[in-house]
Image 1 (cartoon, rainbow, N blue to C red):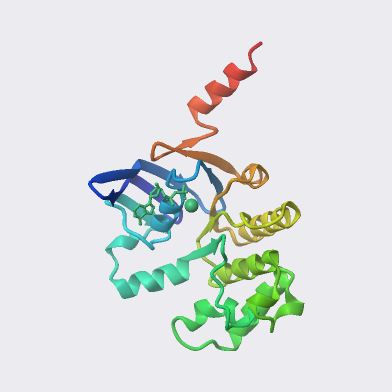
Image 2 (cartoon, protein in one colour; image 1 turned 90 degrees about the vertical axis):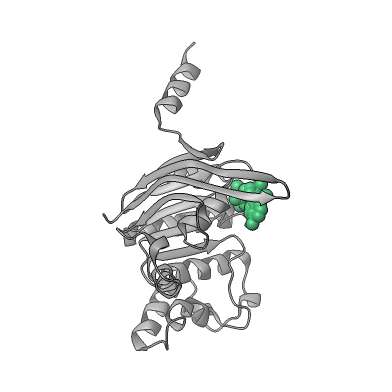
Length: 239
Ligand code: ADP
Ligand code: MG
C-alpha cells in the first residue's frame, strides 16, 4: 500500500484536571497524487493531526500507515530516518535556520544524515530554480521576503521526494497575491512528484484548489463530498 491509511486515531491532552479530547476516532485514506485541504476553527486540532501524521507526536490509540509502513513501531533512529525520507513539512513560520543560506537550508535533509554530495547540490539547485529563487541562492532567510522564505521551505520539503507533504497554514503569513502564487507552486510541485499533500488552511482559494476538502469537527474529518455534505448542499439548493 503506497498511500496513507489512518484508522481510529485518538489524541487527548491533559489540561490540569481535565482531559482535552482533540482527535476522536479519526479515520482517513489517501492515495498517491491526492491532495486534501483541512479546514476548521482555531483549536479544532488541525496542527495536532498534522504533527501525528508527520510522526512528530504519537496518538493515544489508532493506527497510521504511510507507504505501507507503521511509523510508530519503529525505533527512534529509524523513525527519524523514515520521517526525513518520506515526509516533507511546510510550516507557516517556515522554520528555516537563520544562519544558513537558501542553498544550505534546502540541503538540510541531506546534511541531517551525513554530508551532502554533488548529487545533493544538483538536486537542491534544481528545486531552488523550480521555486524561482535561482538569484537568491546565497541569501540568508533574513534577506528574503515572507513569500520567498516560504518558497525555500517548499524546496526543502520536497528535497527527499517525500510520499507525503504536510503543510500547516503555508500561506497564513502572506498577502493574497503571494499566497496564491505559493498555492499554485505547492500544487504544481506536488502533482509533478505524485506525492500526497495535506494542507491546513484558512484560505478558501487554497482549499478550493485542492482535490478534496474536509473540516475537522469534534475531532473527526467531515468531507465536503461525503453523503452528509452532498445532502446539505442539495437541501441548500432547493427553492
Ligand atoms: P489548531 O491547529 O486547529 O488550531 P491545535 O491542534 O493546535 O489546533 O490544538 C487543538 C487543541 O489542543 C487546542 O485546544 C490546544 O490548546 C490544545 N493543545 C495543543 N497542543 C497541546 C499540548 N501540547 N498540551 C495541551 N494542550 C494542547
Ligand atoms: Mg494550528
